[in-house]
Amino acid sequence: MHLLIGHDGVRVRFAPSPTGMLHLGGARTALFNYLFARYHEGDLVLRIEDTDLERSTREFEEAQIEDLEWLGFRFQDGPYRQSERGDVYEAAAARLEEAGLAYRAEDDAGRRALYFRPLEREGSFRDVLRGGVSFSKIEDFVLVKSDGMPAYNFAAVVDDAAMGITHVLRGEEHLSNTARQALLYRALGEREPEFLHLGLVLAPDGTKLSKRHGARSVAEHRRDGYLPEAIIGYLALLGWSHPEGKEEFAGLDDLAREWDPARLGASPAIFDPDRLLNLNARRVRSLSAAELLRHLEPFLEDSLPEGRELLTVEAIQEDMRVLSDAPRLVREMVAPVDPGIFADELPETSAGVYARAEEILEGRRIEGLEDARELVGELRAWAKEKGIKTRELLHPLRLALTGRHKGPQMPYLFAILGGREARERIKRAREAIL
Image (cartoon, rainbow, N blue to C red):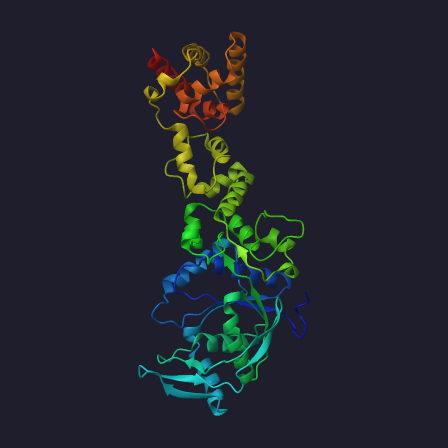
């Protein structure tokens, strides 16, 4: 795929409307524009398309920019707000009126607006991913709305021309807009950018993606504890493929080194929230305990056991899918235990197991994971000598320490609770049996 014919340098843009939060579809568009600019050592422009006066708010704009920054995007130019560029649109509208290509008229509701009258109502434009795209039966359409704000297609064309945009990467749903925009470029005597219309993002059942399929905003995923690297890596796979099938990337820099626009596609992509969740879980497990602790700080509801913070993070890391799982997983390790809940389900050997564990823990200090592993090794050796199966040793101990049937490895539990607290919990469990 050769994309740079006739252009001195690449300039692309991401142009969100601040009428809501940034959703994953918009983030994907931003990502591909970002990667395209980096691949060609070009510029990425941020343009805020806020001409819908009723629905656009500065709060949504700030929230979208915050999410873009959280994902790691950096822009070389902007942000520009269309609401502040009225003079530019007025000048372009005047040129079209002087050429006899625009006229003012009222609609059925009596609202007066400026309309575009195309010289041609059919034609074609070139799409890099799809080849020639034909269109026909284009009717007159609004350039400037009755409230004086430019219509979307008009403002987009005027801004793309004024800002020197060389390539427009966006979703397939814009194909009908591109037909009108091509006619406007030609009417204004401006060079058309190269168009790349990415395939639609569909739900797993092949229908239009919606919130019921798990399509939520970037901010919602962020609050749930998804990592930006996982979201970026997954979005990159919705319309692009790695030559060796790689699915996980350490971040934008890692992805940018691997990314090649020649592997972009126009076929629809399927958004699978379970796949995104699995990628996030794998990314969580790939972090060092120190890195993960930094990510977890905004999510933790209580302080981690003092002096055992990294051990606690290591203990829950394997079971964590999103960062917001952390408070629950920590509670499941350190919260008080009521042994009366499980006492009746314990095997007959449990009383002996608890008595031996109490004996070994009497006055014993557990300074770290190695001490805890040594302790568990002693218990295993004793159980083997007594003919007690491993499950009959470890499962009662786990219930005594956490009240749960599964969780972190046993050495982590002893290391995090400490010898004194572990002994007290085991003692209470033994007493509950008796």
